[in-house]
Structure formats: structure tokens, C-alpha cells
Image (cartoon, rainbow, N blue to C red; front, side, top):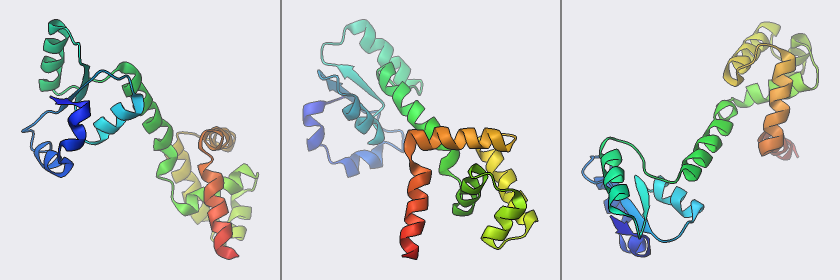
Length: 170
């Protein structure tokens, strides 16, 4: 266990070398409720956070859970990290071409019109559309458009990608 105030003293490089081997389970003891700090501890390889005034029963349960392969963080922290991961997961893996096709679908273009715009065959566009639908979990254009708008409203990532492409042309 490491106190949060002493975490800066621990050489993280050494800590990271021990953690993957399963030799060390790092739990941070803290009297702060700081969600971003907890997320940072997790990303550094820590398996849990406990309050400084933890009672014996909770400490025992935490140790058992950690040695059983579980994480011991506040539910709020874990929920936020899972939601962030899931909301980014589907479209994060879209290729640049799929993002272009996605934008044209949003504009209401047919596969043939998209093919003409991108100088591709209609069949190639069809494959991009199928791949796109599979990755975002939809079966038709209207659902794809709805997903596009929801994702763009949450992150703005698709708009940023388009803007970056436009900047390259200038």
C-alpha cells in the first residue's frame, strides 16, 4: 500500500516493471475523494484506492477482492471509466475512408453518389458501408445517421476529422 502523498516518491518505471509480473498489487491509501486522481492511479497500474481511515472489515474485503483479480475503486470512478471507454469504443476504430463515407451517408447520398465523389466503385463503397454498419452496430442508413449525430454531439470527433482534412487541402 502506498499513501497518496508519497506516490510521487515512487519511481513509476520500477513500479510498472513489477506490476505486469503479478509480483505487486498496488493500493493507494488516500483521504481525498478525487475522481481524476483515482483514474490516474488506475492508469498507472494501481488496483485500488482505500480511505486512510478504512475499517478492518473493509480492508480485509478489499485485499481478498484484489487477490481474486478484482479492482477496488469507488463505483463512481469505475462507472465513469467504463462509460468513457464504451462511448468511444465503436467509432474509434473507423478508418478515415469509413468516416468519409459516414459523412456522405449523413448528407443523404446513395452508394453510387458516394462512389462518384470518392472516385471508387459502387461495390467498394458498399463494402465500406457494411463495415461501418457492423462497427457502429446498425442495420440501415437512418440508424447510422442517428448514431453519427449522437456521437458527434458527444465528442465532436467526426467534425474535427473533417476539419483536419480540410486544413490539409488549404
